[in-house]
Length: 107
Image 1 (cartoon, rainbow, N blue to C red):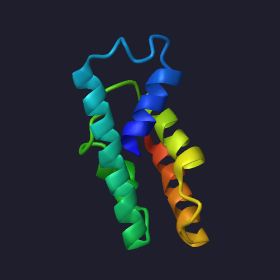
Image 2 (cartoon, helix red, strand yellow):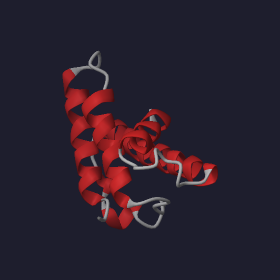
Image 3 (tube, one colour):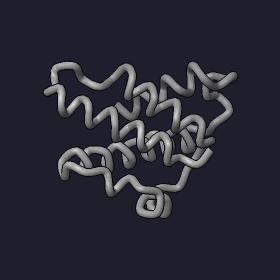
Image 4 (cartoon, rainbow, N blue to C red):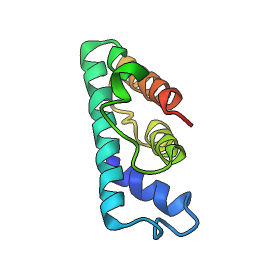
């Protein structure tokens, strides 16, 4: 999911299609997205969003690329990649946690 979101964002929202970024930066960006999604997964598992709050997540995952690209990636996941075959309560929480994460990314 993170790789697909990274590819989408770099192709759709970067003038150069991501070509301005080195393969190392793109790989790190994808890894950053995976790390954030790991926190979202744990929030779902625990049933609360405490791990996402800024003071808990900021020092753990530095932003490799522009913050706006992270926002676009998580919006893409929230709007287009949340599986519809999950229970509605889980889907609702997942979207809520992704929305919270988006608001916590410093722009």
